[in-house]
Image 1 (cartoon, one colour):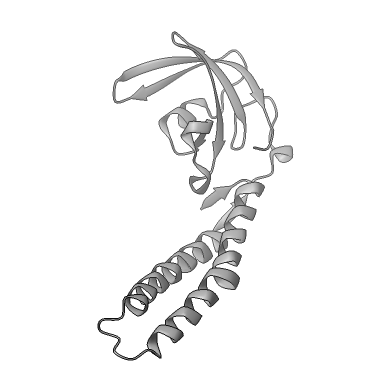
Image 2 (cartoon, one colour):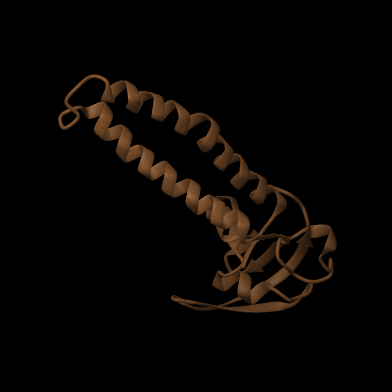
Length: 155
């Protein structure tokens, strides 16, 4: 199952649409022009174009599969008193306060606090309530995180 937020789902659809309607048609046109120039074995535009076209087609196939398998989770349907998928959770530990939004694998952005629901931190937080202590098992050892705020907002 590919759990995803509404915004993440729309982002995947937009990327696929851009590839199908903009980038791929331009590239096909460039490849056709390069092919008309003669010897294809030494034609950089043709060789690069074909390579890039394969990359785009692979990405389109990947996006199509992720979109088909997507299950959009709406935050308004979630229990607001517990940490669940799409929650933004503020935690406190010995290093200070941090916020994490629990998102799908296609939406991960650690620099902006968006972590996968499959990550060790998210797994430790899911199901907890405000004030609970979550024990996270990390490669560097165990860490205690106190949940100080649970919000449901878009990013």
